[in-house]
Image (tube, rainbow over all chains, first blue to last red; front, side, top):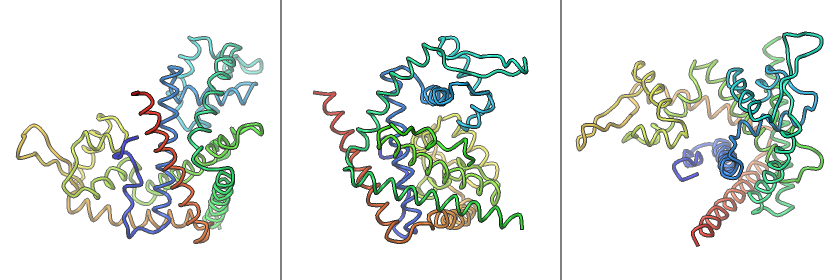
Length: 167
Length: 167
């Protein structure tokens, strides 16, 4: 990421602390994501979307429907179909027709897909460890706690605002 | 965001602390981004990309070229053209041909675009303040510091690895 892509530069001095914090959070996430995207391309010649899709399937050995994949990855059904087609051509995933409903099918990793993903996952984990290596164990733990509180707060707020809307 | 879209659920117990932290960071960013995207649509009938493009132009009163916009937003030139065309139709931005080179032009906010953006920016800032309201002032400051250290560490590492590659 070069300087022009750093969202934090959008923060003005007079912006509220929360807004500056949000732009910093966004710039950290973008920096990590772009680093991982670049390394996946360089080392494994694979896109981040393909890696993410395989990560989803690795967690769900029973397979996922196209709809489930689309929702989990927040990507449109058409794009998921393109990725699944490519991975199927390379024999990394397979479509399995449901016994109960012959029109529906699930997507699963093949044995070769699982092996290929495991190799990438080891490298991916090491990249992430390296990216966070500027923080010591205590700082990692503190950051984890604070993000946990942030998340809980946001979920609580979501629940409150939904219940307000329905009453 | 519902549970199926929470990247943190991908974290296994045996994953390295950094990997779990990264998935938590990613899930917080996604949650905030999706909330903002939804509110922009509901309240102002505008996409996040259009808002981000206007935010870039608001910071650069002298205007930006299409190439600069594309790099800053990490979006392809074709997509930028679509957004700029739409905003131009609504008279929120204008193209200004350079006096030195008649083939090149810059994109600027119009007076009406600046007014429209200012209104949205006030609401946007309040949404962000609300999203972070689960953290008190001290926690916000601490989180800001930790993310600052994380970012500095990543930039230092990037510099190191580039200099390693060239030597």
